[in-house]
Length: 296
Image (cartoon, rainbow, N blue to C red; front, side, top):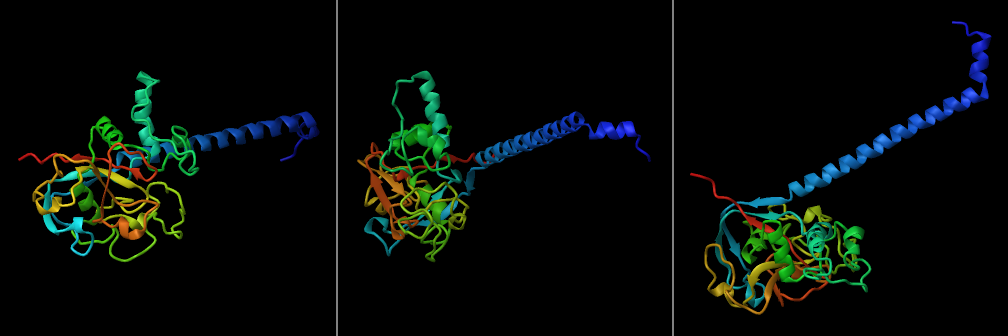
């Protein structure tokens, strides 16, 4: 096909060339914008899917609780039956807790109720609420037992009992740590070789450290509030079915160890306790929910 001299001149005309380049740039910009928009939509979808699937079912049944070879308050070893329940796959994050906290602020902006403690001297934790944006996927810390309980109830859930926590961590086998009995870099502890020296890790950072049921971060990262009062002799008279701890007490049970603890304190059976009003940089929580019994 021959191109006329008039068309050749038009193609070589600077104004025409400029217009063509601008049109091409606009087209490329539109394609880039569309790709970015699709990426954002995909990211939001993945995030939403993660939240929708965060509750893990722990089936009803009997498991072994305690450890004869460890601390005195882990004895005696005893069998416990638990009804089926759900437990969150991850510890509650800054972003998740912020939604709850912000809902309260809308009604009463001056209220400090259920506000997490700030840790200005710890840059990898920081102040609240800024850290909800800076570290959205980190487990929320600086929350009291009452803060944790209030959040759980706001979500239509509750804190796990100590027995529920231990079963979710060790399963039906006698695992020293959620992943098994071998020592490995599968949790964020005081060990300097875990990739998160002297700081909290985002939830789910150690997939090889998941428990028998697939629950994440049940060793290290942050201690977790449970529903129970603490007693060092409770195991001697604990009910065999669905124990909920002593009826009264001074301390609440925390489990799992944290980023400032050595691995032995992060075992599936190690018990510790805090005053329920304390807010520290190493204690967070996860939530649980009783499973509905199948209709006969």
